[in-house]
Image (cartoon, rainbow, N blue to C red; front, side, top):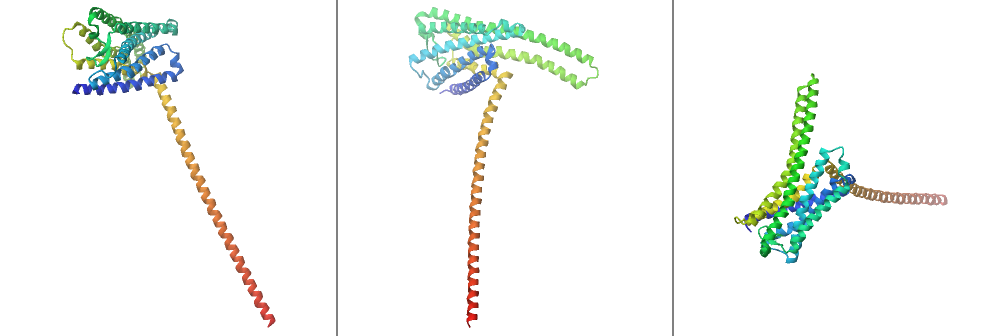
Length: 379
């Protein structure tokens, strides 16, 4: 194996482990906390987690096998199924992120009417559209046999070499797929989150104005307190910008290189390095490891739920340990009591034996005295 392939393989192993563990934790938190299940965004997060988990256990190991063995490790039928899942899961996860951004936008811009605008029925309809959208493109590619093992990406995915007789249709299909999936999701994310950032900055300015007015009125306030308030204002603005940048930035960094590479591959302007193709595929896979932290695990509600689960597990372990220790202590005490009772019984037996011997000696002495007295009397 080449050095780049070794590094990429190790990177892919890390992505698989992190993605599997983090998405399982999100799923456990969702099943454990009833409040999370009642919330509308929980449905989108559940769908996104399902897609990430299935992508982690089906597509990523096959890509790792392709890197290690420098070829397709499975059969043609298995590759068809994995390629179908690759298109379906990637498309579904992108649309789920777009749906989450719309939900956040409505929650921030229309906070008072959020529950009347976004209901569970609306979320189910949105998820139904994402599934129909993803299934339609996946089924078309599978029926036309455009799915196979692609050496450039070391994975089973859309393959232009299998569409040699229908190149024009394949190009149109690929461009439409990326336009109504990646590009549409990117536009929705940018528009909604930038509006959310605008509203957040507006509220921050209002809070800053109220804070400054309060600081002006409080003439006797200590300078350190004033400085702390100003630093809190700055952190509040930076926090909002950082969150929005994370939502949009992870999407762009993870998916843009892969989509651009697919388009450049269709145009055939210049040859693409196979190492670059595998790196782009790993970047797209890394989104499955980033999503649990970006959308779930960094939020207070999920962190609190995870801490509760860990505390309960540790408490059960501590109770089990205490029970074992108590059982062992009780057994030791029982053994000690048994030994003490045995020692007491032996001591009592010795005392009884000593008393019997003393009584026998006394009887012998008295008999001897009587015999001596009788002898003197007779004499």
